[in-house]
Amino acid sequence: MPQQLDWRSAAAARGLKVTDLAERIATSIEGIDLSDDLDAEIVSIVRAACVERTLLLFRGQEKLTPSQFLTFAQRFG
Image 1 (cartoon, rainbow, N blue to C red):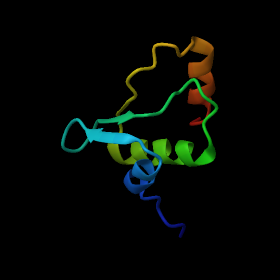
Image 2 (tube, one colour):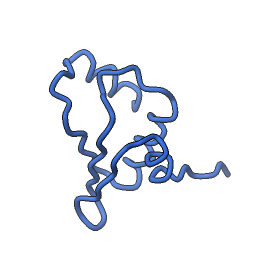
Image 3 (cartoon, rainbow, N blue to C red):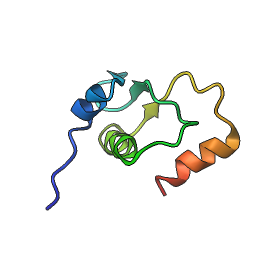
């Protein structure tokens, strides 16, 4: 069985700020620009966070175009 990613530690190591917004669901992740070409580790962090927390909030994405959003979303199926 593959080892699960400690996404909180990985996020901190990448300089991301993680804030839980509720006890069991909803987390804000700051420091990611979704308009960038995200590397595999960032995608793994986001995927693992989504599995654990269900709802993720990425603040400060004002320059994200619809096309860039779709590119980001397609990384997750």
